[in-house]
Length: 484
Image (cartoon, rainbow, N blue to C red; front, top):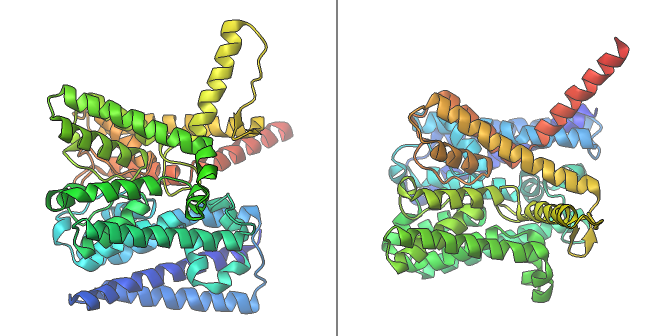
């Protein structure tokens, strides 16, 4: 194992966090508010430690391209280490417990959007900027973000990038990373302009575009997006557009920017993505109408909240806790499905849903007709290997089991909670969504917070740490059984 490469990777990420944190006191200066001294202190600490550590290791150590094991360690550790580092200045600056600061940071960087902070409306602009930046950078990917602002990170980051963004848009990984950054920036800037010209305040437009394109959903208002809808009702149209774009994969977005519309429409995943969005949104609208909501308001609630759920953004209009149970079930399904692969969205992903449906279809046909049929799964004209199919089905199974386990823990710790609400909260955590029925708050029991943090972490890493750990333990057990 190349410990020097691992250490350099982690120190580079420490440097990244320091540079990001430095933006908080800069925003304070720009907004005329008191400088956040804790963020300034930790920024200097992280930048100096990370920079000096990387210089020493690259100068006197042998830093080469990472192998899979080193990349795996850095990748999986980063989703815990970076939120931990970010929690320290947040805890000191706004005087909250470490657990709440860690929860907010994990929720931010994983793009979940759960909030345990009180009185969000009255936080300094720089703190809400920081919450938005956590989501925007986390969903872009730490490695891509590092490649954006640290030139030497290219030296050994290729394998690490392959774990975090395993699809190429361009011929090389370097050009792919640059293309992803271009796409992200273009749609971020476009979103800010669209929201601003729909009547949204410029600062609000920046915050909500950053968290929408990242499918994160954090807001600088306690009422979430409903606060924007109250003073700029037409903003829901660009907001829906940004959320839908955020849930699409970067390959399709690259084709869109190149005006290759036929290539986009040819994709099976794109077709299923939009069909699922429409069907679930229409069903939610129908349920709202059956509960005596007006037609226009039912369409608004049904489409906005369902699109928010399936793209795993987490914006909401209306009181989610008061939604009809039928709507909650639809939103749970949407959150479990999630967006497209190679996007900022969470959930099991539409691609895996296609694999599941086509595998079920072939097995059903074989069983009912008692004929031999082709059991291979074909997507976009490509026949998937059985290993790929098994991997997709395994992720779906692990996701559903995790949702059930977290919901069960929530129900046991909070016996007065409706089990559907517990399922809703668990699906929101594991799908990295952030919609809530009100279970999560600063007063939520510690065990529930830990369970939800575990769900966010596993959902973001797509259960890779769990799979690798299980494989290691099984392999170790087999070796012991043979040697004993």
